[in-house]
Image (cartoon, rainbow over the protein chains, first blue to last red):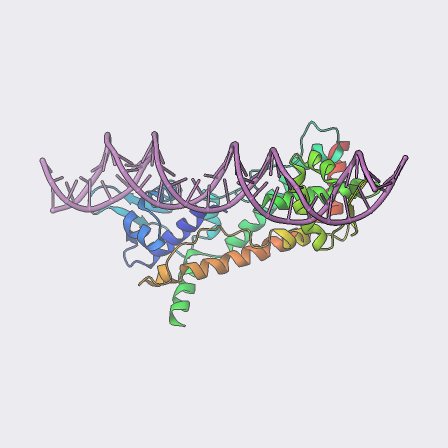
Length: 141
Length: 141
DNA sequence: CCAACTGTAACAGATATTATTACAGTAACC
DNA sequence: GGTTACTGTAATAATATCTGTTACAGTTGG
């Protein structure tokens, strides 16, 4: 799994937690524990996918433009981590003179596609708003 | 995802395809397209988990000792890739003075645990025998 | 104009993955 | 008993991926 997914989710939850729904890349980076450049790269992708709005220039930053309760982790997953389940490595060789070796790559691929969908279904059941609720629940405990 | 999982599944399917259920690490490696040492490492783990039997010495190799129809990908996943979903990287800092930053690591972890279980459930529905069937189906097509 | 931002690219450093080499141990077979 | 063909495992090297850093152009508010 891509760790950009984690950064994206964390950032969105942080924005949802802010009263005005805004934060700069530096603020986010400090909260996430990474560097601003990485955050900007991820946020840039979130902007292209309609999660946030960007304001460049002084006093700028990112602003959440979707309802926390309407954004699911599946939306985020699709935006920047879909298909990341299968390893880059692939077994077998299509030109092999063996039933198993020659077709395993394709069959394994189908298995991972299914797994990816399964994951997406699971992520669909968790919203950014719920993540925030879980955090506050932890904090109260 | 761990690519050893792929090697393990491929190897088990290959063994299941052999009339006598046997193959050496070199034969398997050549079919999988990797090196024998890597195969031996994976098979060593499969042996410890009761999937195969090992015969050292001349004419030796690995032999399947479970029914292909009874082994699911979930069994293999548990044996050598469980928990591999979450990235090594973890966001936030437990000591942060922020509701979000301080608890995100734990909450995210819970999310990935759930995802892992979801995956396992999916893999439970696919047996090594079915994988072999899919391969023969592809070959006939 | 200046200060505080985002957007990117290019590079460096760290970590993880895969392959290779080496060698001890074991079993069949002559 | 020696030779051959295997497994088991450690150590190392090569490669790829991931993460952090630096640099700088573009944008906007004051």
